[in-house]
Amino acid sequence: MKRRTELILYVLSIYVILQFCWWGYHLIELTKEAGTESYKINRRVTMIMGEGSVFLLILIIGIWQIRKSIKKDIELSERQNNFLLSVTHELKTPLAANRLYIQTILKRNLNKKQFDELLVKANEENDRLERMIDNILNASRLENKALQLNREKFDFHQLCASSIERFKQLSPQTSFILDANEKTLVSGDQLLIETILSNLVENSVKYAGNDSEVTIYAKVDSGSFVFGVKDNGSGVKLEDQEKIFSKFYRSGNEDTRTQKGSGLGLYIVRELVRLHRGKINYKNNSPQGADIQIELRND
Image 1 (cartoon, rainbow, N blue to C red):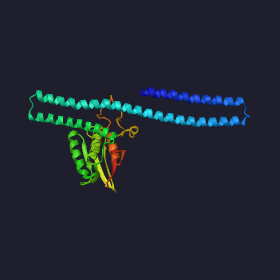
Image 2 (image 1 turned 180 degrees about the horizontal axis):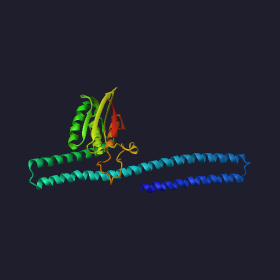
Image 3 (image 1 turned 90 degrees about the vertical axis):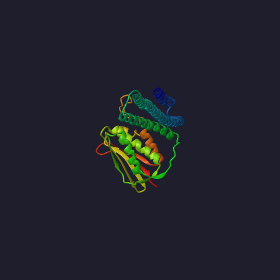
Image 4 (image 1 turned 90 degrees about the horizontal axis):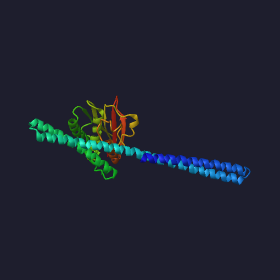
């Protein structure tokens, strides 16, 4: 429907512009027929042509703005459709896995080790489902400006260490490095900064691939707290670097994409950083990979 609206806008815009040109041509011809010796006629024609040109310029600018808005709405609609496809699959997967684990426990006579392994796997799927639901709820709260900061002093090093322990269980093939001084006290909303960190680490683990290296770094410098997450994966394509923080945005085709996700993680990170009145930047890691760096006030 929006593509059709865009096509109609183009047709009407071209028609209006051509019509203006046609009227201007006839006005000039009528002036010639009336005689070039008439000073008053020439002056009025010049005035009409000048005002018409200004109106035409305003019309073209308006059409361009409308086209830009329609294009933005179309892109958002496509990302929303991709989000629905993705999140439907993502919600079904842990539910189906847990159903299989429960059926296995009920129908088979398992020993203690097998029973515990299935429970651990079921708990991991529940954690994954909980993170996805939290992201959806956080995105909704951010959209409605319902999140409030609860600033406090806390130890960022300890927060990173506990996050790494959790991700080691979820992704044992990934090598995690913590580059931050012990007792790094920072000021901010601990729960929201933990959400930022978890989304960044999960994003790096997801896109860096198997046997990757993920580094969490942090430093306090002149009243600012700088931290980030970098990996040694393939990084982000140049044309996608400005879009990765957009809501629902995921590069590639949803039908052929292999990475899991909803397209909300980095959007939530950006909005939570803005809530802290901070800055977020994407940088290419050296020699390869992605590096997302955040700077917050630490007063």
